[in-house]
Image (cartoon, rainbow, N blue to C red):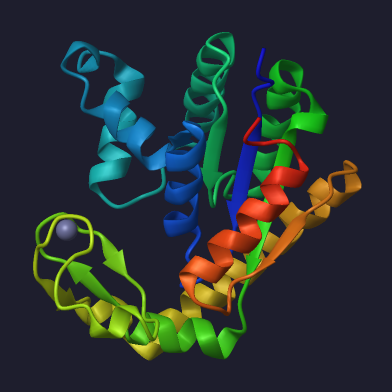
Length: 230
Ligand SMILES: [Zn+2]
């Protein structure tokens, strides 16, 4: 039987990790686990609205505050355990997001998947490329698909997924904002990658500079080597 695995994608804003993760999921039938989606499912579940913890987290969420880390980690780990029982391969993008999450999720996942089947992937990008792509970024007005700048995407007038119109992302694209997000990414991600290396993980590095299709090819080649598509 196919050995289920976990891929964890990291990469600065504009590296294309969501696009690449979607392509891997499409080819492999692995499931993309989105922590923000899991959080939303819980806090808006009509059957949980009397739960004081859900009430507390909903209040955090709606005020723009961070949800309690212990609670988030619990939700994610519960989901991983559930999907492991179904022998599902999983893909995370940008999560575990904090050291707290990494230290409390990775060792737990190892129990179900085995350390040798968990693969961190870093899509690298020069800061100036990240800045450029993000200040030239558009979004589908219909389905929200983000179109990061590339020579190819520059010519698109419509969303490649649903045909909706593409609009500028407005304030999110502000240069100063991107620089802050880049710095946050660096400061947050570096300790997590160090932590993974200390735990003997090999980080698979993929160059995010070329065209998305070239990145996909390099990524798929790397995934073939770890038997991800078997
Ligand atoms: Zn669309």
